[in-house]
Structures are given as C-alpha cells and as structure tokens.
Amino acid sequence: MFRGIRRLPPGHWLEWRATAGGKPEIHIERYWDLPASQDGEPRADGEWIAETRRRLEETVQLRLMADVPLGTFLSGGVDSSAITALVRQLSGGRVESFSVGYKEERYSELGYARQVAERLGTVHREVVVGQEDFFDALPAMIWHEDEPISWPSSVPLYFVSR
Image (cartoon, rainbow, N blue to C red):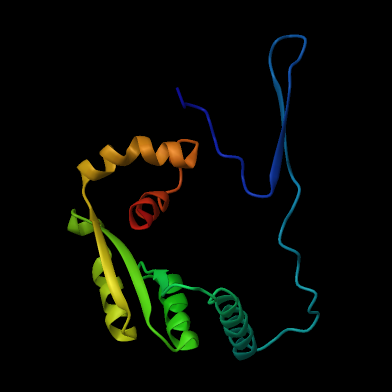
C-alpha cells in the first residue's frame, strides 16, 4: 500500500495537477534554504567554536523556564549530552534525564547515556523496549504521527514520552 510513497523534503512544496491524459503531473520545488553566511572574512577554528557554544548556550537558556523539574532526552550521543550538560550548568538545580534502550543489547545505547547522566549528576530514568513492545505500540505510533513511521527517532521518542 505504501510502495512508492516518499516524504516531502523539508523546505519544499509539492503541486499535483490532473492532466487530460489521466496521468498526474507533479512538481516539487524548494521554497526555503539556510541562508549563506554574510561573513566575508574567514575565521579561525577557535572563533567558530566560541560562536557555536555561545549560540547553543543562548538557545538552551531560552528554554529553561518551567514550573516543573527540568528534564532532557539523553541518548548518550554528542547532541543530547551537550544539551543536558548545558541544562545542568545553566539551571543550577535538579535536572532529570530520560533515555530509551532496547532489550536487544547490540542496539541499545543506554550505557552511554548512563555514563553521561552519572558524570553530570542528573536524576536518570531509563525505558527499555523490546521487539514485542514495539509491534504492540506500532498502531498508536502511526496514529500519533498521522503517517507511516519514517524517522527512526520516532520510536524511542514515543516510548520515552509515554
């Protein structure tokens, strides 16, 4: 039923037209892209690193207002670890971290997340998902996504959010 169906890329629109011959005419066009840098002068690596850190700190700080304890999704990867570290540093208070792993050890990254949580001193919680859990939850995940599951991160996000 889903063969040949693809997701429209981000920043694109699609126009579909019926033709007289009965074969649809499809036109896909990009309407937005990241703007090119306006900096004419090259920067040293240290400057780019400092600018990236400043922007990341600013972005995290903007999202720290909450009436409940702060929490992060922590996979143990670079992105979620950096965000969790900044939340911990900038909030100065208790931070909860949440991770999803799999019963099939070779697919699970809980060990990395656990190491980061221990190092940062977060109140850490883990959800372990098995093959049966996945298939049992599949109809609900599709219903919530309102489309077939196409992003691998949708599965752990569903379970940790639940």
